[in-house]
Length: 249
Image: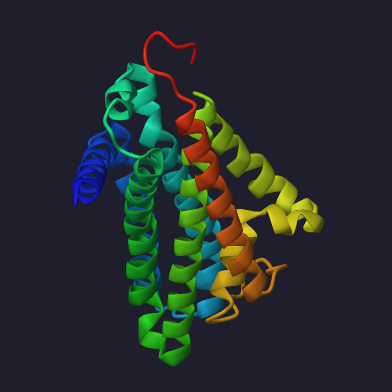
């Protein structure tokens, strides 16, 4: 019971920290972009899965919105507490470190999915819903891809933030260089690409007409699960090595 209370308190504090920052306002504006584009598509009478998926989902939702939201929230889950030193108060409490990491991870994943996934779902409902069954499947596939990608990005950069204070810079560099450039030029790195995990997961519901997914759906789900498990385990290990004042960390 004490662990449950501690878990809920950490989740609540983390959610307030993440949503109370000025950058969240900019992320909300960015999340509104897919919805606005979907409205424009509908107003122009362009109810096509292909063009909508390439312009809104591929270019905006899964390339910019999803990774940026998860990286910002993931790197900030521990980052602010480490920067201002308040993490020592959290670690001084008799709460297992794995429970702290789990609470932080669930908080980051929840807000990332709510923002990026909610935006993708609303935009898909506006533009693809009226098409019929195929449109609904395409919209559901896009939401699933964003959810899988958000979970992977959030867990990865939550862990990175415990190893370096430059997690946000590393995250943006990863998004632009590894996922934005190298994944297009080097097909062989698909097994190490969160974008490919997201696209592979989406194809379990509907084959989206975007950049070809280089992973099967089963492989994408397995690699995504391995990434989340490994990164959260590393986060727990790193948090266990933090020392309270008087130590060397």
